[in-house]
Length: 304
Length: 327
Image (cartoon, rainbow over all chains, first blue to last red; front, side):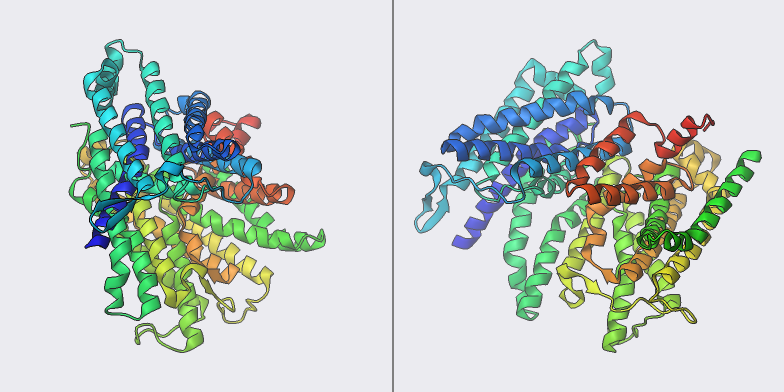
C-alpha cells in the first residue's frame, strides 16, 4: 500500500513535468499550427544553462533564472530565425526544419559541454523526505516539483480564462483566421505563445536536472512522450494537456512499477523483466492509438 | 512526350554509370565507394517507398522506419533459426536463401503496413503523423524487449543470405544484386506512379472531396498505397540486413524515420528518382562531414535547414534551376 501511494506520487510528478512541456507544445500546435520538434531542445538548453550556473555558483536557485533566460532566448531566436518562416508551410517542412534544429542544438551543446552528463545537487532544504502519512515518506524535492507544476497549471488557468491575452489565446486556438480578421496582431500573439512555451520547457528541464542526468538527448526522450500527451489531450487544449499529462504520467509509472512483477509470475525472471520493460514502454503508445481510434481529435478537442 | 522520354534516357544513363561504378571505383583505388553506393541504393529504395505515400499521396508517415526494421528483422530472425536449426514457433523453418527471405520480408512488412495503415488512416494531419510515430515506437520497444532475438544489441547475421550461383561474400556481387533489385523497383514505381492508380493517389493529395465526388473510395486507395509503401521499405530493410549482416532496434528508431524523410525532402518531394538523389546526397554528406569532424550532425542540420527554408523541391529543383530547365 505504501509502495502504491509512492508510485502514484511518482506518476503525478512525471505527469506534472509532462504538463509543463505539453502546455507550451499544445498552444504552439493549436494557435500557430506548428509542429515544433525543437521543443525538447529548449528543454535541454534550459537544463544545461541552469545546471551550469548552479554548479558555478553553488546555489541551486541561481540556476532558475539562468534556465528561464536561456530557454526564452533560444525560443525567441528559433521563432525569429526559423519558425516564423514555417507558418504557411505544410507539416512536412515543419517537422524537418525543427528536426534540423534538434540536430544543431544537440551538437552545439556537445561542443560546449562535452558528452559527460552534468549533475546538479538538490537544494539543501528539499533534499530530505517528508512523512506524508504515518510511515509513508516521500522525497521533498519531488513534492516540490508537483507543487510547482500545479501552481503553473493554476496560473495558466487564470491567465487563459481571466485575462485579455488569454482570451486571444482561446480565440486563436478555436479559429486562428477569424482572430486575424478581427484585427488582432497575430504576430504578437505568436511570440507570446512561443515564449511562454519556451519558458515552461526551460523550467521543466532545470527541475528535472537533480532527478535525471542532464545530457544530450534528454530532450528527445521527453519530447516524444509529450507529443503523445498533446495528441491524447486534443491539440490546442490546455485542459486536455493537463488531464492527459496526469493520465500518461500515472499510467506509465504504474506499468513500469508493476508489469515486470506480474509477468514474473508466468515467466522466468530476466525474460519477464525485459519483456515487462518493453511492454511498459509500449503502453503509452498503445493508449494513444486507442484514444485516437475512438476519438480522432483527442479527448478535449479545442476546435469543436 | 519528349519530357518523359528524356526522363527514361536519363534513368538509363544513370543505370549505366551505376553499372560501371564498382569497376571505376577499383580503377581509382577507392573500393569503399562500392559499399557507399550499395547503401545509397538501399536507402534510395526506402526513401522512394516513403515518398510514394508522402510526396504523391500527401500522407506524412513519421514511422516508416518500422517497416524498414521489420524487413531487416525478418532476414535476421530467419537466419537465426536457420543457424540454430529450431523452427519458429516449432512450425516455420529458418532459411538463408535470399530468394525466400526477400519475399518473406516484403510479405511480413506488408501485413504490418496493412494493420498499421488500416488504423492510422482513420486520422489525418497532425494526428496521422503522431499515430504512425506511435506504432513505430511500439515496434521499436517490442524488439528492444525481445531477449530471444538479441534485445537492445540486435541480431548478428553471420553470413549474407545465399543466392544460387553467386558468391554473396563478395561486396561487388552484393552491390550488383542491390542494383538489379533497385532497377526493378524503380521501374515498377515509375509505372505505378504513371498508372491510373497513381493518378488517383495524387488526386487524393490534392482534394479528397473531389475524388470522393468522382466516386472513388479514398480510404481503400490510401490503404493500398500505404501497404505498397510499407512493402518497399521492408524490401530495403531486408537488403540492409543482408548488407550490414546485422539487424538491430536502431533500424526502427524514430530518428531513422526522420532520416528517411530528410532524404525525401533533400531529393525533392513527389518525384520518382528524387529520393535516390536525396539518399545519395544524405549518405555522401554524412560520410564527408564525418571524415572532417565528429560533430558532423551540426553541418547536416544547417544543410537541412537551408534546403527546407530556401529551396522549393530539394536538390533536384536546385539542379534544374541551375541548368535553366523548367520543373
